[in-house]
Length: 358
Ligand code: NAI
Ligand code: MG
Picture 1 (cartoon, rainbow, N blue to C red):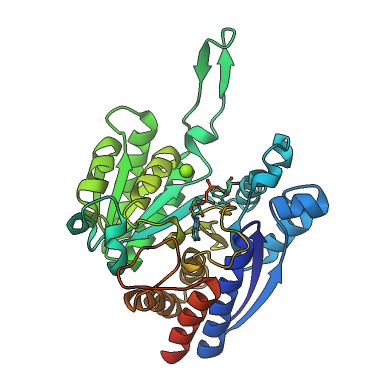
Picture 2 (picture 1 turned 30 degrees about the vertical axis):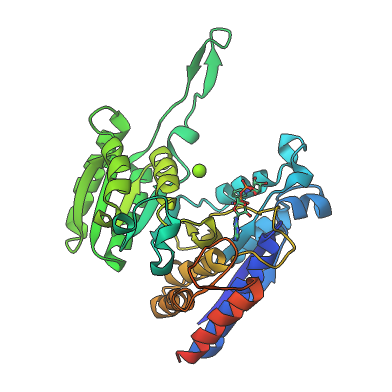
């Protein structure tokens, strides 16, 4: 398989962990006979410094022509006092919008060796392995009007969805469930919100197209509770933008470290942008100690969702689990009797495991 991948390192540890993802993908290409061609472009603070804008046209054009995009992270104290159009985060929001990335996927898994890192009881988190599919370009964050009235004393936000917007994200939820354990939880607030009533109707209509998926509807407040009292109940959760934003942050505590969490943002035709959940970590940037796992697992998601290379994605995920099981860890993780390694060594261990498997 021949693919063009755009790399957007961004700022801080983004620049470090992007190399790890590239090394891992090159190992996959060699072992499984694929040809991945990489092109690097600027975004965020790095782009502001070089071109005076957080999202240069050349970056947008390159991403539009690519088969997939890998992004490190953007931001840092250097640009914190910039006016809002010259903030690194503008680059991130801009590229999501320019590519119409409407589906945000966040897998969350309690890694065996790291369960005690979670504030939740080990027996509660143990075995949890779920995927949140969040609508990313509609709902309350984009609805109009969104404004102040009455001299600022009355405020309005608008939660608006079209049937088409709901259908495409619900399809993504069903398809993800088919690739996993066949269980879909649709989260809404259908006892109160009109938007949620249509959401629930669409899920009910779509059910017939996916007979191999078992579906349940859970109200968002109950889902929030169940996520931390019984996380192993869930396989795939599909939900609208605001609910997904809150539930995905809540679910992230199951793993215990930001450095372990990947994400995917997808367009309808399969183009995707893949990035770790964490930021540019200015406190450890440039030291070679960042955990590359979230970025590497993001590359695995790219193989799965944009290229349909499920076996190759699994090999990367197995490599990560195996290296952690052996006790190797970066400084953000506490592992009993573990061996502390830096970004480069962690990456090499994962690459070597992949090469040993084929
Ligand atoms: P952060 O995620 O960068 O860091 C939070 C804490 O977690 C820090 O102590 C950091 O050292 C640690 N950490 C994060 N990722 C790690 C990794 N891979 N390995 C080891 N330790 C890791 O969040 P923070 O500090 O709130 O934001 C820093 C900058 O990043 C800000 O400019 C912020 O706007 C930006 N940011 C960018 C995001 C993105 O590009 N998607 C997301 C979140 C924040
Ligand atoms: Mg958030």
